[in-house]
Image 1 (cartoon, rainbow, N blue to C red):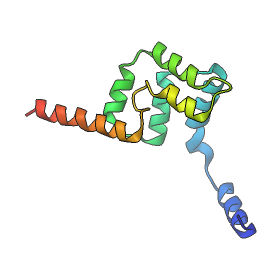
Image 2 (spheres, one colour; image 1 turned 45 degrees about the horizontal axis):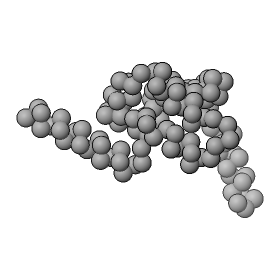
Image 3 (cartoon, rainbow, N blue to C red; image 1 turned 135 degrees about the vertical axis):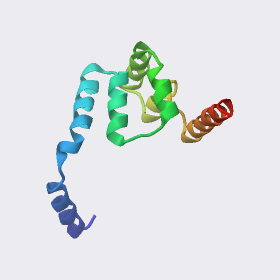
Image 4 (cartoon, rainbow, N blue to C red; image 1 turned 180 degrees about the horizontal axis):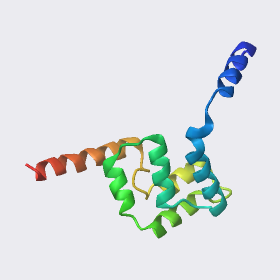
Length: 117
């Protein structure tokens, strides 16, 4: 990065309102302290990111919180690679590969549409 870009980025960062990120910071601190995420943590982050995946949300909320905690605790373990972390998260709704998640969402929406006809 050239010095002009750094100055521009620094100037822009100085004007950034951090109020928007209070939810993110709060959830991050709670997860870092506990070593796992809860459904409430994940739901807060979905709200913060404005994720609109209805099928994913429904399946996550139907997953027992104890299961969410166990899965995320394994993913947050010390000494594992990022790939291992992602793999550990796969059992959670919405944490499969992007293509698999889109297929799953399409199937759920398609089946729902046929049932309402």
